[in-house]
Image (cartoon, rainbow, N blue to C red; front, side):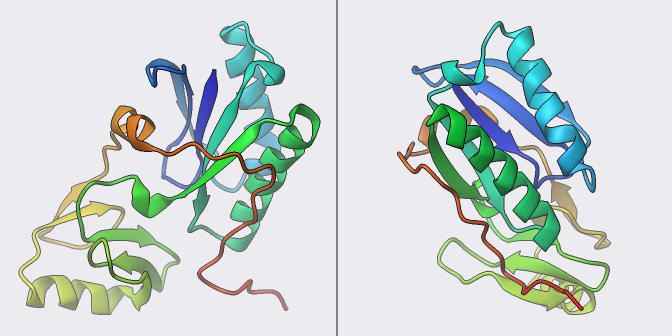
Length: 186
């Protein structure tokens, strides 16, 4: 069995899938700003519900970024700690691998957002006011994920089954947190 963990999206998800890449079970829950206190209990109860232990898991796929410094660091620490004991394989993926089309916008703060124009473009950090202008100037009417932009269709549904079928499982033993922004530490 394998786990897919996404805590970066608005709604967090833990998905159990088998070697044939079929989804066995899934839970969705709110975790934002409570990663350290809610992630492990949610994984524990999910595994117990499915009559599994951490040692039954062969690979953990983790959506690793982008997110706040503390958020990403906490989730990666939890997954690496589990893996230190179980010696599972880990597969990190990006939030931007969750959607099939572009542009993709991911809220970064009240002031700006992460923006990826197309599959080959670099991820940019753009002020919210500028992203609205870009979408209007380029007549973009559909975007993927989070934004408070007017006159644009927001598509936030993640096709986890398709992602699970396409993800290339890796044999990594430790995930490094990835950041687009430097930590805001005084």
